[in-house]
Length: 176
Image (cartoon, rainbow, N blue to C red):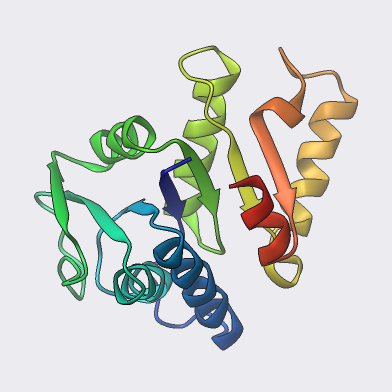
């Protein structure tokens, strides 16, 4: 898996340990010669992982909506900017350009990306797995809900084919 898509927060107000873990992932990706594919914005966990990839020798693809107006623009860590039309187009590019998708802590946008990726896999549009890095139990309540769906029999294929849950960087990198 050479091109790793990362979904994560653009917020600068996440817990400090989340930035540190994002940097650890990015440093590992860079040292391993991997390419980061992500939302391209110069803030939050997105910027932390991108800068770490770049500083450690990896490549960075940023998928940036043309009309996006946030408190900041695209990251200066980006090697290849893929301009897209909107957030829906961005998700398509992120999935298309990535071999696997990793989910770090985030909010609505992060969950939207993750669920779009999982739904696409569920219905056979692609075979890419979504790996949730459950830092400090961030996604425990989400997993409880997903377990409830599984128990209800609401799945076309085993969830383990669609998504994986990890708690440590070692578990994550072993899958990558």
